[in-house]
Length: 210
Ligand SMILES: C[S@@+](CC[C@H](N)C(=O)[O-])C[C@H]1O[C@@H](n2cnc3c(N)ncnc32)[C@H](O)[C@@H]1O
Image 1 (spheres, rainbow, N blue to C red):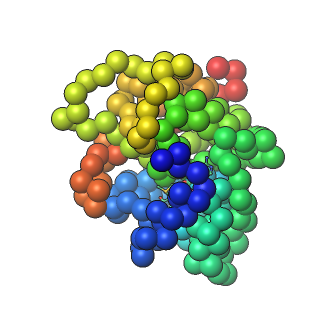
Image 2 (cartoon, rainbow, N blue to C red):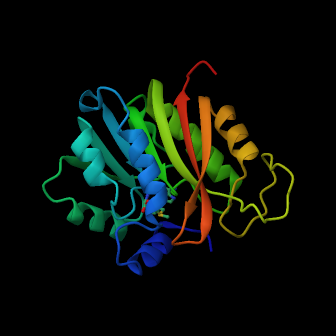
């Protein structure tokens, strides 16, 4: 599967609930978002918002909220579920966030910086960093390598042979975030009981001079 917008529409159409994962990653993220100072004066972006599970919280807490996803039917569902909220919806590929350069104080990406191609992951991370203001905060949940998975070497650019959704171990994710200009990286393993899998919750700060 290539994981094009239509693939995501098909997958998410099968889920009744708004989120595509168990509640634990969202609860952990919520705790972090609640600690962002002066949120009412800040702009937050939900990158790969899916059906919009996080949008009520973001719209309630932040001054401005932008919801971005490239899957048309999924984005329409998010828009419908957010009636009355002050959220701007944009259909856009996270691999090109050019119109949002230096726009966001906070970016959130819950299992949306995903796919089978490492070069796409790297490109999305680079674009997210550029969409953030200097010192902007990035909170993201990534699919994790499971503790019982056999160890494998770090994937560098050019090692692009996966057909499955890529999962990350802590060292590799730290490397990728650092490489794309994020600092102060903290990674935490969170158990997603619904999926029966661990996820990695990453917090970091965008630094342009890196
Ligand atoms: C697993 S779902 C997660 C949705 C939501 N963040 C949540 O927590 O429920 C992944 C979402 O990311 C979106 N996505 C994946 N790759 C994308 C890309 N390159 N550009 C924009 N959206 C993307 C998909 O369309 C899908 O809605």
